[in-house]
Image (cartoon, rainbow, N blue to C red; front, side, top):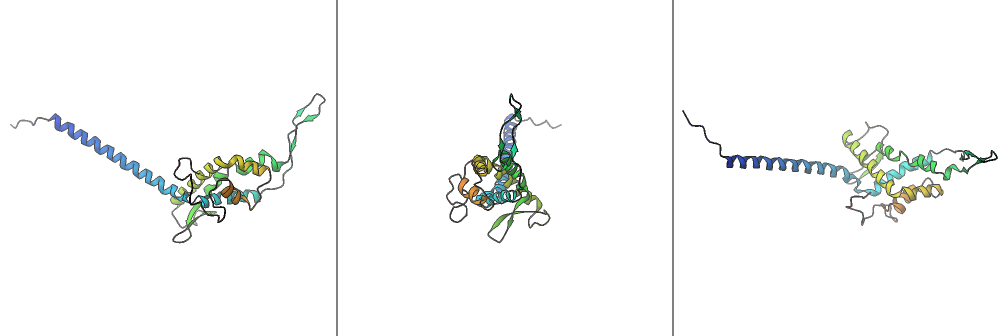
Length: 208
């Protein structure tokens, strides 16, 4: 009868170390793949000027659809004589108007995706039907989510100033792109309307 081979603890230890090392390497590869996938999607926002103009286009649409509204009667309290106390506010300079224009704006950007115009250029387009696209629906939806996220960061950085300009009546239909993309966010060159080449925010975690 053959004698069972004794297990060399040293060899077993080396084998376990090797397995753990391989597992760590596998996890690293998975992380790299995930990072590459994320980068592939966010790369679409390299053209921040184009993305900003798409957001401006949607806000323009909201402005163009506005209907005349009555003044807001804020006289909800009564004084000692029973007279109503408070203000009557012009809707066009009210906080309510700002909320109605900007709230849900970034959700509407989920109707946009990035489509190829030619071999060297792509642009953001608003889709009425998701079946009429030149790329896969999964890719199109990824781009839509990407620009919606971009819109959220854009408004986070510019909302206060944008709201004040809206309330002052300084933004009219046709002016949104200039105000939002050139004056406030600086994502488009003032002279040409194209993305700034030297963008000091590039590479930062909080970039728009």
